Image (cartoon, rainbow, N blue to C red):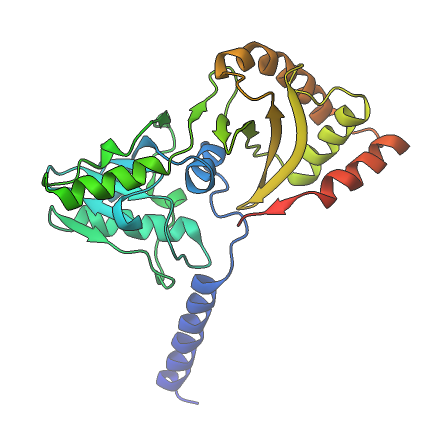
Length: 290
């Protein structure tokens, strides 16, 4: 085989490998980002919220607003005022949600003001959020009561009606201040706390089982443990509160509970018989939402 043919074959193999890597399912797409848990909450749980990120200098150094949801569920939007927004809640996605969002951001940054970027199931090869974001930049989540941050152009009746319909769908939600990545919400006459954990699933479930077996898995008093969601490779335990319990009523108890949970997370001793039985029940109630 000539050198040219050998090189062509190697190029073909490299292209096939790149395509395979680009379409491989990534079970934990946001792993490695210090704000992984909050990012997943904006994608799966929080109806209206924003947080700022900054691109690395080699990707332009721009500030971008990460939003839970954009109008028409766009992936990204370069607004007329020059602001670039990236949406987390989209109707379709590829096998790597991190690459999807990164693609949308870079396309919007390069596009003219007024351009919107649709979500796609085939973003192609390209960088991921882990490649393009300055992860030292603070990721401060602002939970909002409405979608007014959309700042839709125009003031006609159609725009107003669309915004009103979107706002009517928002369940009251607030971010707890005393612990990271925990959100209080009211839905259908019930009140919950959902707390995203970026530790490994087995580690968190073991810790919850230890506390549950001891009757101490109650958020420090006000919560009844229901189970957990699995989302993008991490788990989100859920507690139900007495209806009407406000977020301020939870701050101090959950801060105390966090110490108890940290102790259980660091305990690597074998589970007791009761904790193993409890663990089986917890796992049986888990629900995968992505």
